Length: 127
Image 1 (cartoon, rainbow, N blue to C red):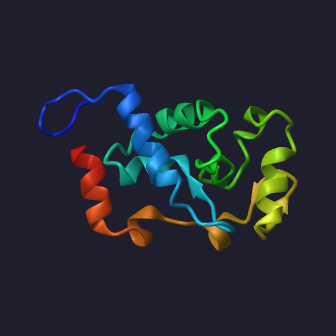
Image 2: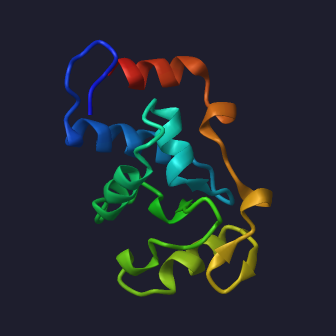
Image 3: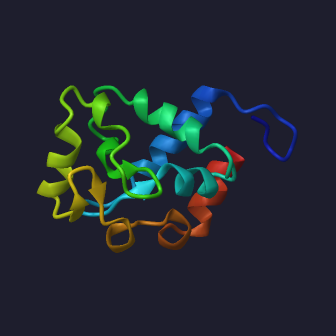
């Protein structure tokens, strides 16, 4: 991955940027891998955002349970120790579901492009 300046961006740096965005997702809202990637100026890197979420581990300050796929599916649910943990955390925050594994994405979506100030984005993109 390269910045527009031509400087290479390490995967670890990208992951930390992802974590900073995810830390901003408020309780009761969800965001998609793609929206996070787009916010970071790497629109085609949604899968890399997913890899970052897989690597969160025990970092409680990163609410990884609030990141779902673009349809609202809980694609990361197996990375929480128990498959119901992700859903249980979202339900506890008041997030509604269309079925067992699908958040009502349109109702609960949090878009960082609309919700975060442009200065926050510029700070992350410039690194």
